Amino acid sequence: MDAYLPYVLCLVLFCIGIYAVISKRNIIKIIIGVIIAEYAVNLFLILVAYKAGGRSPIFSRTQEILPEAMVDPLPHALVLTSIVIGLATTAFLIALAVRLYGKYGTFDISRMRELRG
Image 1: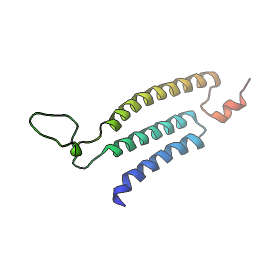
Image 2: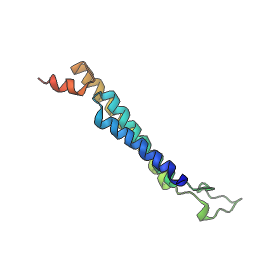
Image 3: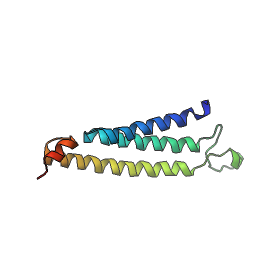
Image 4: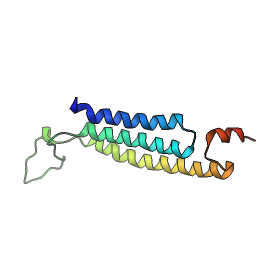
C-alpha cells in the first residue's frame, strides 16, 4: 500500500480541485480549483516518470549508464509543456475574472446570472 500512497494523494488533490470548480460560486475560488487540479496532474506525471535510483538520460563519456537505469524523459517534457499551458490558462481566467468584476461588480456567479440585461 505504501507504493501507491503518492498516487492516491495525487488523486485526492485532483478531487479537491475538481470539487472547488464544481461546487464554488466565487470565480476566484474556481480559478484556484483549476490550478490545484493542474498541479495534481503535473505531480502525477512526475510520479509516473520516477524510478528509484534512476539517472537522468544524459550520456557521458566518463560513466556508462545502462538504459534500464535511466528515467523516462517524456513525462518531464509533458510537465514542462503543461506548466506553460497552465500559465496561459490561468492568465486567461484571471483576465476574464477581472473583466467580469468590472462589468458586474461581483465575483459571485449566481449574482451575475441575476444581473443579466
